[in-house]
Length: 303
Image (cartoon, one colour):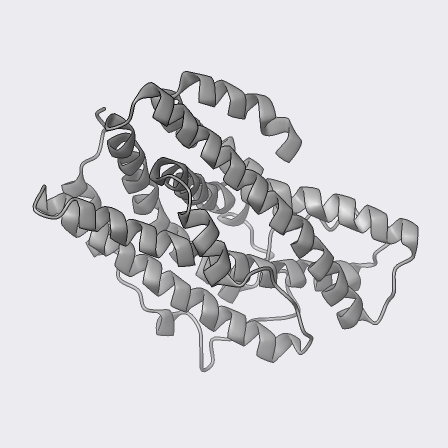
């Protein structure tokens, strides 16, 4: 399978992007809790008409904390997976080796980045916000699946980042500038990662039988179900954090609507926006046309 870009080109692009975590958060670079952290297209707070404007802002920020935490969590399995893949291609194409190691180094930096922003959030928000995990258990479960399944999930996540920034964050002037800066710099490096992931998926699939490829696609689907179960729990955690932060206890009808709307918002944020990205579907269709058709058929569930 051929691509319009090469390992050498992706490495060169990565090396031109040069930022440090310390440049983005800390000191006088703080979060502004008078502003939303996530775009409405991801947060979907406006659909909860029983909340006032201040309460919707609090919920938006709770969702922003979950965004920081969930991305920090997924980076915990992406990093060892990329390192394992890099180890398997040692003594091959030198640019491929270097590009994958650069990828791994940037993922380690992203883990640090999300942790620092989460610490800043906790210090400023002042209310406990629980998060699914622990990361080690999630990573262990994900990495127990076939490499193709993990590579597809990783590709899904990388294109998801691109979609979030380009479609709903890039032109949004209402967001807190510091949080938006995090999303911008994360996006800048994840573009190279997405393209490397596409090549990784193709390289893994080339060594598999058609039956093994289909099993790998099914494993990716199973991981999507695992993620969805986690998002159900995260929605309940976010509800509890919202009630703690606002001092408001929702009634049964309001709680049910909150969970329904916010679980679907989480589904779109972390599942639907990745699985329906045209570039993800292109890569999947190259190795499994049936897999692509199955994912496209399931997509409305996560919209």
